[in-house]
Length: 59
Image 1 (cartoon, one colour):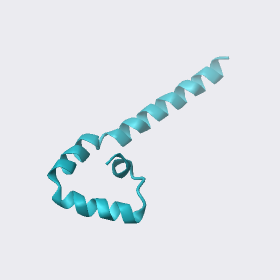
Image 2 (cartoon, one colour):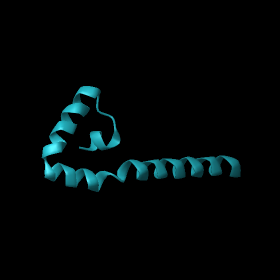
Image 3 (cartoon, helix red, strand yellow):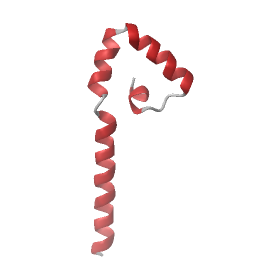
């Protein structure tokens, strides 16, 4: 589920999971819950990068 939400599955696994997702309500709910994770990871990465840049310029 996480690999699908993060978009890191290869094409074959992606298609297989998408087919499963069409009929599995439990996975649809779980995917909706995980749908914000990639964006949150981007924010954390950006914030961490900015903090590292700030540390470098303050020394």
